[in-house]
Amino acid sequence: MNMSIKANIAYSNHTLYNKYENTAATPNTKLTDSSVALNGDRIEISQEAKILIISKSIVMPSQYAQYFPTRDGEPANALADAVINPSLETFSKDKSFEQIAKDARTELDAQYAAMKKSGKSFDTNSYEGKDWHSAFQNFDRRALYGVSSNEGGNFTKEEQDMASSLMSQQQGLAMGLYTGPTRLEGSFTDQFSGDTTAKMKEAVAFLNNVSTEEKSSGTWMSSIITAQNTYEYLANHKDEKRTDDDENILLKSLMKADKEMAKRMLEALNKPPETSEITSSSFQNSIDLEQKV
Image 1 (cartoon, one colour):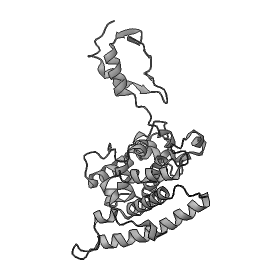
Image 2 (cartoon, rainbow, N blue to C red):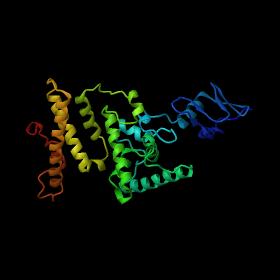
Image 3 (cartoon, helix red, strand yellow):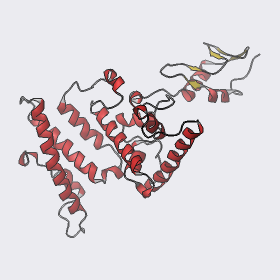
Image 4 (tube, one colour):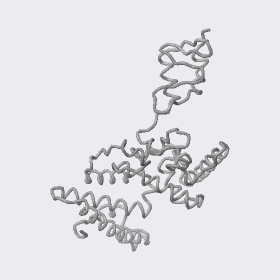
């Protein structure tokens, strides 16, 4: 039996992802170099058609997906992709922040309903946070921020806290700091090989690449000041020998000073334009680490 691949291209929609393997398969189906055997019948397909089928149907796990394990084992690529590119928009693409919040509420409710329908309701204390990862699996970082900031008042305290936790995990992994299931810690590679200066440089780059909504928050302002100041200090004192205790003391001092600075800057930014002493552009140039440390 010969069949036109064009007439049966919809067949690719039934292809299933085999976890962690570069293969695709369906029940009673075997993909070969030149054909597909379906229930005893053979369908001839071209190389171009096979590439199209594979590219459209296999969802490969992102590099960091394993650190966001889900209930059904499917890769939470949206969460993982933000580790490499926090500005990547999938769920939130071409949406206003208000619409993102509405869609996020709908998505979470749909995920909870699907879990309940499966016979096992959503568990806030699920092993390794699998149910939380499943609920948020389609959220890009901008959507996560919509939940963490409780945009529109649509989200519970637990949902806000989990979204914030996932955002912190994304930044930590990007900096080479492991956060994830204990059983997988040994599989994680610190791309900076323990170089604290490089880690802080990555933190600055990561935070500068988040959404405009996230950048408007006091949390972001405090974090970017801390990261920038720490990086500049370490870069300017790279020849000095420091113990781990020295670096911990330094970080605590910087964080305390930066929170105070961030508070002053937020107060200034919220003043009417004619009385404000600082602008968003001057904020980036106002850091003077040497006077604080």
